[in-house]
Length: 176
Image (cartoon, rainbow, N blue to C red):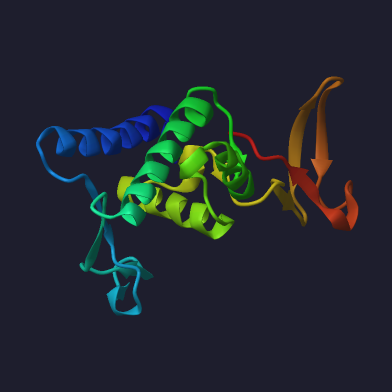
């Protein structure tokens, strides 16, 4: 997991890239791996499927491209100012609803904001958790013969995840 400083610097680096392109008379763009079936290949070394070398450009040359870049910049600002600097987080669903206040930059559907988060993961080489974004509202549950210590207001207590909490498991809340 990347530190907050690393995540902020990567997002600021993206903003600097767009700004520098504009200042140098280049139409601002972001290069991303093409998300097509033809651009997915298996990495034997990593034992996972990865994107190949084909790229697609997101550019402000078109209205659609300009809106996408605008949404990307709004998202990066949200992640830096609200999430990382204030040590807060949101679910993917909450990010979609936050955009309702972004006027022309708001997302039309959650799938659009989800894809943009994926784009930021790809461009920065980080994961959404590094931006304090989680997929679900809840945290996680631990099941089975596992013992853990929990600090409560009444002091420390030891919990057996199978015997003490039953079949529901022990809930671990999401924390940034």
